[in-house]
Image (tube, rainbow, N blue to C red):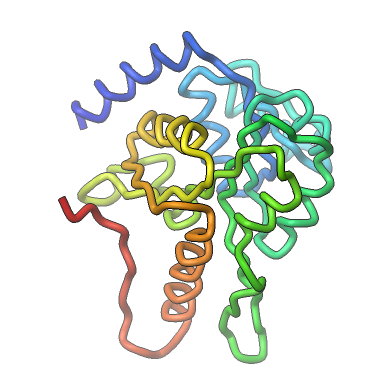
Length: 230
């Protein structure tokens, strides 16, 4: 615990010196977790919401603090340096395309394309490539990094709910953007690991489909955990 607090303080001092504006598109549990964590690192958070003045969204703004606010998604993205996609996976591409010109911005894609099949009580992988690649295709001049899609929102807020800091796989075709997102991950007390290019988004997303389908099945239960081998 002490080690994590010390690391967070060191990274927080660095982040404040390089504070950025982060648009978190989505105000569900993942958006809440990432928004509050970015604010705790000294960044200014703008939540992108279809109902920015709603009681729920304004309560989240109050909880986040540090000068945070809420706007319509495209307005939040336009005012930001970094865009975080924390929306339901099957609307990710449509939401991304509706955010306007994101050229030159880092886009962190924290989504999974989970297509629920109610009659079967299971999830299907809902896209032909990956959400990460779809977002990059929608914004070819942005720097898309796949991250935060394989851990729970509870672990984002409190890595100590598990024995060792959760590993956060990163996939991107842009090394500098990936390194910057790795710094954000460390600032949250989590452990980033480089999967490789953006095509590896598909494999990290598929692990979530496998885990969820097992969780809702009657088969023997298991978990899939990314862990360092060194």
